[in-house]
Image (cartoon, rainbow, N blue to C red; front, top):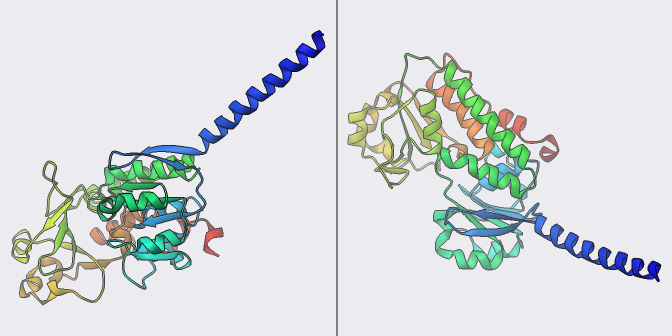
Length: 322
């Protein structure tokens, strides 16, 4: 009799353990993330099919040894060097400012990592396709959290911590090596008749400023945007010594303005048309490359020129490059 009771007890215990174990396993398969909408999103850990609206999730995933299934592009037909052109193997779901929801739906993503300002207006549609996480992807202060969040979501939290720590260390080392008596005036801008230029808190601008550069656009105003339009007349007044232009194609209307030729940076050949890593800088690969490029462009006698593909190959696991 005692043996039977004991047997029943064991069976009941096993059922409880199996049930609780199943619940625990299910709980471990999801991660709760509060995105930049202030919304709590429950997403699957270790998603097999990652879709990226912007390059942030591609950048983080590749650094972790994972290849997403879909991404938007910055410029049609251009596969970014800082991602080793690996985006060619991913489904193209439109330009980042106008992602194609139909194409996105076709790839059946497990999770969508998106730039907030280009997708929040269609949030309900994105949420119908898959768990949708929206980040600002604008400021260096946000980059560390974005990398940490996505590394946890992609199943490699420790590697995310290592990537953040390595960048902070490199940023400090480069800043320490930069000349202390030089603070070149700089500007980061989109091409245009009235160029859109970026405040110091913007990720790329923060990196340049950390190296000793003096941003002519200055800091953000309270509750302000990460950038503003700056006329050529204002640019001449502030006279940047180094200009970084986001290279989005052959259309460069600012160069047609006669004021452009009067700028110190133009006269001295210090205008640099930079790659997509300068636009999408919040990922671990992009920010490391921008740090090295910025150091060289600011202080060419102190820091060597950068081979973007070679540096990217050092940061992306070899098995993804084949």
